[in-house]
Length: 466
Image 1 (cartoon, rainbow, N blue to C red):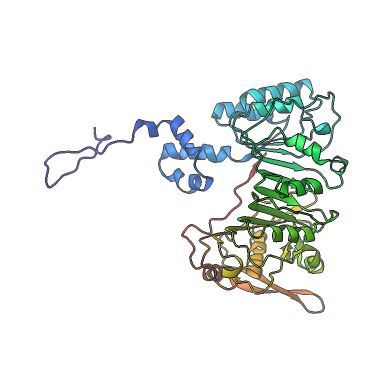
Image 2: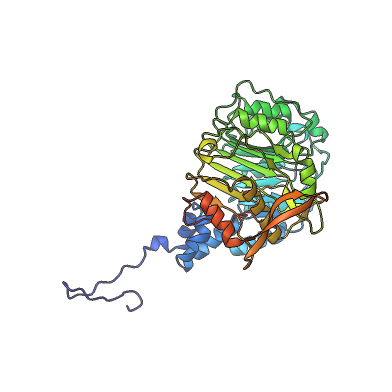
């Protein structure tokens, strides 16, 4: 009894009252796991893990399941065996190096085993695959049909393979829960050069409730269709090719409220500016993502090609502004770097006028773009790049509306760093200011004086597991 009750004295009643134990329903692992599946990642990490041992175990299983896992024919069997023992499959899965068009007997067996045992929890499925003649292969459709919680599908082929069979897309098949679709191909690929709007619509017809469209170099005509009032897309994430002609959006979509623009050295900045100007009065979330980081000198030379030079004077409904800074660079060596993204405000930045509804500001590394020729940069350097970008463009004036700012923390016990100021002199030398970390974060608190307590928790919650 001593373990189950705590005895206390009451001044009015000379009796003992046990403190009730938690209801059995919130102590069973199965129920805790189901409850934790509905909680945001941040709450699982910061709060739920501190409740009790049972809640911590349920939270950690959920956190692990939300990490993107990359499966290949070499590691799929081991993953399935481990998941069977652990009793916890990943929700976000990338299948690579599986030739769906011509599977070997071993690969067929692996895929069948995965389809029937590892798919029920999946919400995000990325495939190293592209549909030939815009007709999805039966084995891929079977895979989709065994994912009852599937919400996001992405086709990103590493190489093209010839089909062994040609089968038309079934007319009676659809996946109602899929709301997001991504597609990625090289800009000069012949598959995209000959793509008609009819073929693309036929491809996505199996996802009738599509709301989010992500694509690197989506065809010009496809983008114009979904940006117009003929589509029901509420969010787009695109990289606009500089070879595309100007956008012609006669009747902008009324549903589009979230835009991500990926900016690089070959981006069509004119269309970026047109896109933002067209939807300035209705966009609620805007993310600007740099393709890579460049040396200061190279950025200074290419700035006219990398600058979004017509940010709308007023983004009246913008609540969330995010800057994507990648952890990679196309230049080796110990040189100062900057995101391949420039901003030009129409006049001095006044938050209350240009961003009157802004509530959240984020600097993240969740850009989703990685290139083999690019080199990963150290955490310390990445922090300096993010801090420099933030200081150059946004730490000015005062913004009373923002309640939440998420930026990287300085690594380790660092107390100071070099903050980029400008390029100057005949030799184009980099001038920087030595800044104390506490002073830098004080600048942030001065610019955004109404921040909540839970800021500066860092970002980058999208690690990839091999």
